[in-house]
Length: 158
View 1 (cartoon, rainbow, N blue to C red):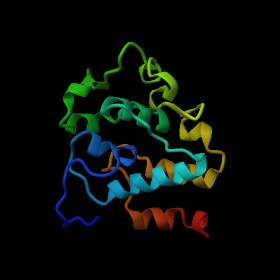
View 2: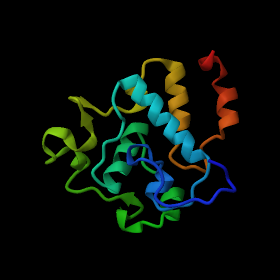
View 3: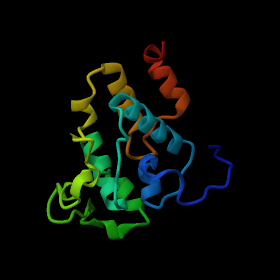
């Protein structure tokens, strides 16, 4: 992705879409970094990290993965305010709404019998954990550019 390219909406496979795309915001090359995080996590876990049934569920899973809610400054820029109430993501029934009533697949929060764990709990390799944490920065304005990430995590790539 290049900054000067025309950007369509939506972009990318749903399982790899970054928060900014889910929220209807403009996107740039940092969208691809989120997708890299999805692929690395997929390789680590031998399964896709997100299997959502809706935009709201995808955002809920993103929050679960990083272990914190979407930043308020990101929510305030969203073109999809109907997904939020009082600045927080709306959830059906309770916090585990994405895990209920979906039958065999588990509503995206589990696949193959394994529940989605926050990166801090589910990734033991410290180098990979740090890299994934940077790639899965929820707000693209805070997501580091590729060249900075490559330098920061240089030892991991050796």
